[in-house]
Image (cartoon, rainbow, N blue to C red; front, top):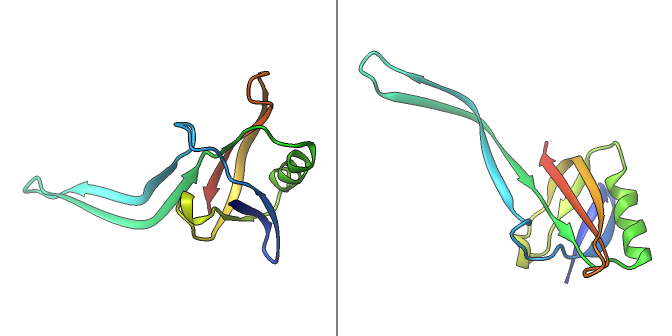
Length: 116
């Protein structure tokens, strides 16, 4: 199984992120909320934004280079996790990423992706 990330039309295939508590998808509603005179709360959701925090472990040198090349792009990317991780295809920006070397898991990369 593998995921894909990259510029639209030129997606790079990378290993799946690991299923650890660090991986997750958060949904955030963007809009407004207010209370009426009666105290009822009204809410208008203008958009739903998703945020992912994938982590890749034990990356080979080639996989590390492929993944970080895509994560370093300043353009909007397409994030396509495989079906075991929710599937779909999303336009995202990379908020941040970091390399982790801890000896046990080899070269690891942790990233934060936000839907645009």
